[in-house]
Image (cartoon, rainbow, N blue to C red; front, side):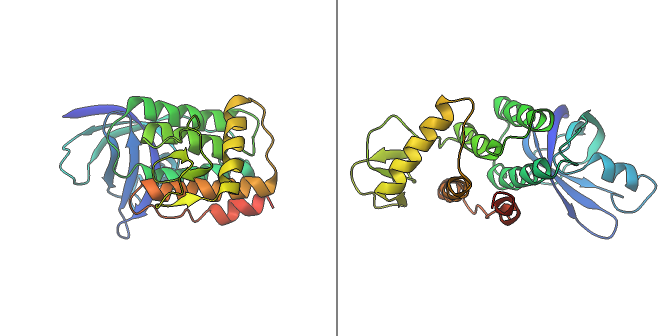
Length: 237
C-alpha cells in the first residue's frame, strides 16, 4: 500500500558502514522503521544525514508492507525547518530528552492522528516560543492522555497508586507514593493544569520528573530510563 504521511524521526541507528535504520512515528502507520541504504557512504549520504536528523519533522512516502519488517522509503522531504531547537542549548537538551522518552513510549504504538498532531505541534511550539523550564513536564503529563494512563486527579485519597493511575485512601499493594509525596504531587499537578504560568522550584522539578519517569515505567513494558536525564538535571541545578 502506497502511503504518504507526516513523520517525526526518533532515532538513527548505524546498520553497517554505509547503511542505517531510521525509527519514526508517523500519523498513518504509527511506529515505523526504515532501512536507508547509503546513509553514511555514497553520493547522497550528506543529504540523507541532513534530512534525517533526530526530531526532524518530515513528509515521507513509501510502500507500506506492515509485516514487522523494515520499510523502504521512496521519497522524503522536510515539513518544518527548526530555527532554534538545534542551536538553543536548553531547547536542544529538552528535545533530546523528549525524543528518548517518545522512542521508548511509542515503540509499540499504532497510528493515532491526534497523538501525532500533539507531538508535531509541541515540537514546533518548543522551537518557536520562549523557552519554558517546565515544558518537558507538561508534555509528558499530557502525553499520558494519549497513552492511556493519565493520572486521575479527581478521586479522593492520600496515596497515589501508580499502577492504577489514581489516588486512594487504602495503602496500595502495587507501586505507589507515600502520603507526603502523594499530597505534594496532587497539589502540584493541580497547579500545573489550572494555571498557564506556573513556577516550580528546581528541587521540585527534579523530583517531579523522577516520579513521572517511574510512573512511565509502571505502564510501558521495558521502558528504559532516558540517558539525557543527567544532562537535563544538571541544567536545573
